[in-house]
Length: 130
Image 1 (tube, helix red, strand yellow):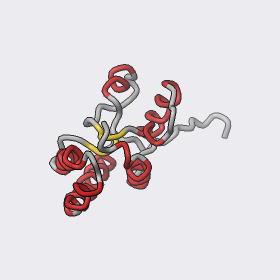
Image 2 (cartoon, helix red, strand yellow):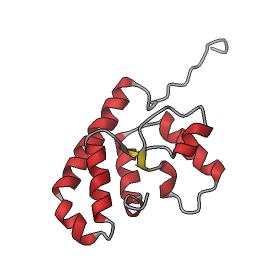
Image 3 (cartoon, helix red, strand yellow):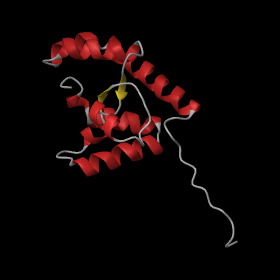
């Protein structure tokens, strides 16, 4: 009815379930990449740095997808998460500040493992440069 209150349910990154899912994705994907470490060292010119970063994700020090430290300080709407190897805006070339902020907010409000996987695949080249 017209008098009902409609509340949007966000699948936020801060929910306990999504924190577990994010950690499970980070752990599993980093484990697979660590097994592939010899190939990464051969095929990637920054392979040693990338392997170190993947190990940090594996041990829970970092995450694959996070917000840039500057963005996290500037935008109080974003949840506090670990430093990421790439950001949601890395998938968009020439991302201006407003668009980057919107992408970060969308990522934090509508989290999914599929989104993490897509962002890692799209931002693969940026993994060893950050």
